[in-house]
Amino acid sequence: MTRHRGLFVAVDGPAGTGKTTVTRALAERLTCDGYAVHSTTQPSRAQLGEIARHGTDTYRGYELACLVAADRYHQLRTEIQPHRAAGRIVLCDRYVASSYVLQSMDDVPPAFIHHLNDAADPPDLTIILAADPAVAAARVRRRGAHSRFHTDIISSRTEAALYRDAATYLKTQGQALLALDTTHTSTDQLVQIITRKLTPLARLPRPEQATA
Ligand SMILES: Nc1ncnc2c1ncn2[C@@H]1O[C@H](COP(=O)(O)OP(=O)(O)OP(=O)(O)O)[C@@H](O)[C@H]1O
Ligand SMILES: Cc1cn([C@H]2C[C@H](O)[C@@H](COP(=O)(O)O)O2)c(=O)[nH]c1=O
Image (cartoon, rainbow, N blue to C red; front, side, top):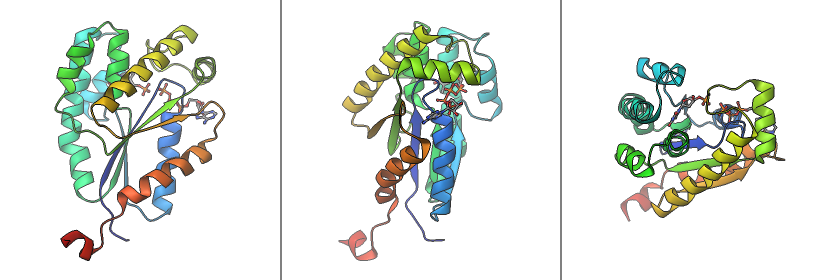
């Protein structure tokens, strides 16, 4: 397998915009193209992550914000950083943008979320998916909601607006963002657009460029 630069790519956006679907399809496509890929999700599949994922009815507000942040730092140290350092493309379904949105829906002030996540590695690229809230809500309804955050068209509208704010903020922090609307775009088309953006980032400089 050709060696590539390790990358950390976060896929974020409101419920029903297709984060999980696109992350899965992107991993398949990149693997077929010869890249070493590690696919993961937040909350993580570790003990702490499972408590957060299945505990959103028990834990709320500041408690949930701290729980997901603790899981995030643990996952960075034990999973994301090692895979990236080994030259893999790490795809993460949800990351810090999710905290800006979901914890805000629990009335946690943005400054608190900011301080809590300040030391979390910035991804090499954050993909922010969007969709017409009515379409996103209908997809969630058909599939089934995963948590109390995603209930109806109202929560989909709130999420969409908060993701726009989060994207604006992350951009002011100098983070690399790719915004994609999935309302009328197929997963295949999305994967094609993302791959075009990602593959130049994964290219290692030629030895003569590296020493120049
Ligand atoms: N581009 C797309 N076009 C049409 N339907 C899609 C698209 N992407 C995903 N879907 C469908 O929408 C539903 C939700 O997709 P998915 O679970 O990937 O979204 P998500 O953003 O990960 O949601 P959540 O945040 O709730 O986990 C699924 O039934 C999926 O098949
Ligand atoms: C990353 C992150 C997650 N959460 C919560 C919100 C959801 O209940 C789950 C994720 O489930 P999904 O299947 O991906 O929708 O975790 C959170 O509150 N804050 C976060 O930053």
